[in-house]
Length: 205
Image (tube, rainbow, N blue to C red; front, side, top):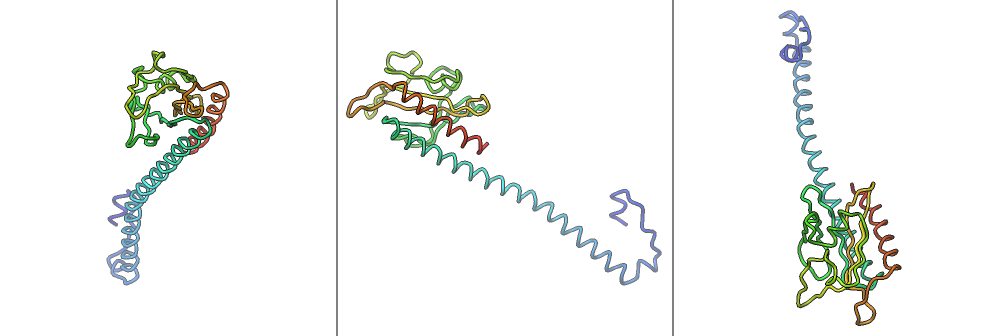
């Protein structure tokens, strides 16, 4: 009766004698148990969803890091350069970030809308950037360290549905022990790599 009142359903209309019957009490008890079980299932379903979402996020993060590692390794090898980095676009923070960059530890973050990086320029303009000498390009605001000096750079946007979701950045094309500029063939290879990365990242979204 209490359940009927809460749900606005008509009362069963049992007499006092009928309510005292054993079968009536057993049905009532069974109904109460079912209600508790259903309530627990509903409550646990939220936890299950949370766990699944957390598991899915962890899985996607691991897959994304795997893509970063692949770009870093294959990019450097295929295009004979010193460094390769996959920058991920974080629109909410107006940042590019990467957890995988050769010779660099930790997560790197760059504000891509302040005009302080070539990768940021690529993210905003959706255009490829091939810079033979970064020292002569106004888009480059980086600082060289004693251990690494940036000379040439090639960046390409990774597009998904006409939207930039990442930027691949290559530094210092190598010819033996010398650093040279990236050429047109390098641009084609990088654009092909960006296209493949786009497919993988689209599956993660």
